[in-house]
Image 1 (cartoon, rainbow, N blue to C red):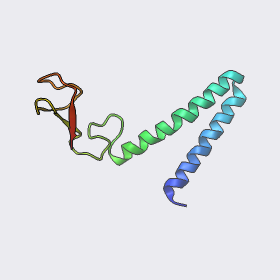
Image 2 (cartoon, rainbow, N blue to C red):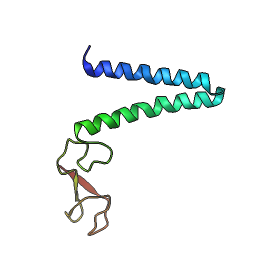
Image 3 (spheres, rainbow, N blue to C red):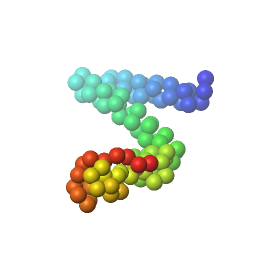
Image 4 (cartoon, one colour):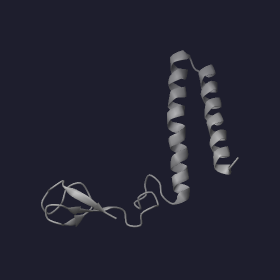
Amino acid sequence: MQPFYRSYVVSIFVSLAISIGLQMILPWPFGLVAAIAIFMLYPLILRNGTLKRMGGGMGSSTGGGFLGNGIRYVCLVCSNKFNGILCPRCGSKMKKAEF
């Protein structure tokens, strides 16, 4: 088994053990809510940690470590290059991505 898959399987069993433990400790509705929250949040935390190790992450401005300058847009109305939703020159939302 590859190291990535082994750590993934171990993390799944850890989250399962924590969820079962919380369901035994907490009363019925609160234990269920806590277990669901752990099953939803734990993979997101693992993913964020993996992205940070790869050089990207949630707070990164490099686009997850795959693009050097991020994405720039070109306005289809006035051909202005910009970053964002609206063109600062004409206010149009019509744009195409430029990598």
